[in-house]
Length: 253
Image (cartoon, rainbow, N blue to C red; front, side, top):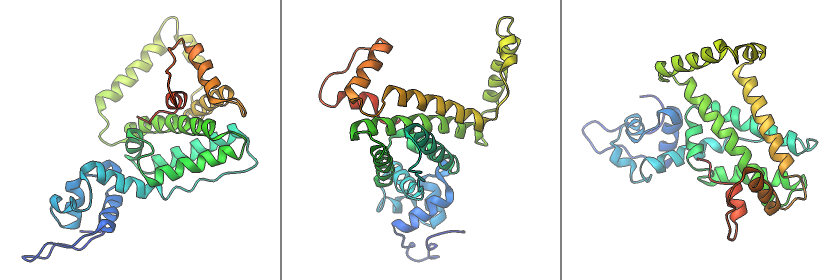
């Protein structure tokens, strides 16, 4: 056994573990391979021993996931305007997430889920407030940018996994070939320059963030932003206290 936590005593009492041991073992395993049984095996204890410290799989994910998120230190250039800042925030969040396989799924389930996620979101809200947004607009922009970034990172993370279904890869290649060979779309497809996944992600997030910033410029109240988006989308507005904020800044799922 390599890593953290004391091994079980042969023939004696089980090893004594604490929350720090569980976090260390979970970080070594990584979010993609995290499970109660895997952590228990690494620590030389039974899965039941973990329940003294964590609330099942959900609690284990939160413990390890929040520990990882605490390592993310965002760089904020005060000279950047809102759009450039959000693009930078998105890039940092995406890169950090992809450096920790499986973290995207944790973030996509609910964000923020714990203290580290909340601190990350609040630091971004504060950065947008320094650029002139009120707290409501800053929260909407920060949460929407995080949602877009995490969703894209999750898709990238799944495709990079060793167990990504080969059949799925073949289907993606077939879909690309259908477009390339289509009598009407083939010529247009041939004109699109090839870009790497990294460049594509940057272009996509930059365009999306540009749209968010255009819809919510500094000084425009959130309720007006939501009303305009509802009008454009032909949606039925949600009413009630805080409805505008909730509809624009949902949990990341």
